[in-house]
Length: 122
View 1 (tube, rainbow, N blue to C red):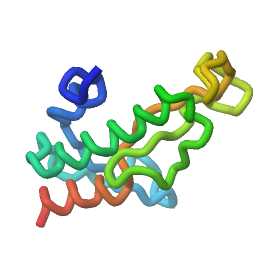
View 2 (view 1 turned 45 degrees about the horizontal axis):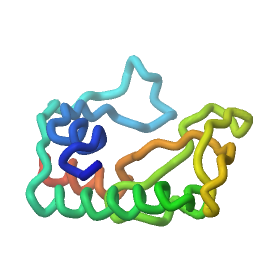
View 3 (view 1 turned 30 degrees about the horizontal axis):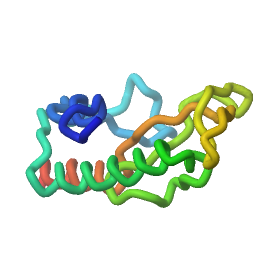
């Protein structure tokens, strides 16, 4: 599968952002909302996302899912998606053997999200 065919790219081609004040000391009903906006990645942003996706996907496909850290990737990173560490899924290990590992998902980095918001509201 290529970046052009990936579900991650498909989901990131057009994102509706609705920024909500995130201060946890403020009750949810009292938080302010910013103006929502539709974001589409620029060619440069798409290239960064593609590079991250390709590097992370290669690690998964070569059986190195357990070596992936949250520090990898400039715009995307892989994080656990399960509520706790007891949830496991099948994957392939470095020798091609079937292993059990925590399910993971692709997430936008906080710095990349901040960049998107800055571009929208600058």
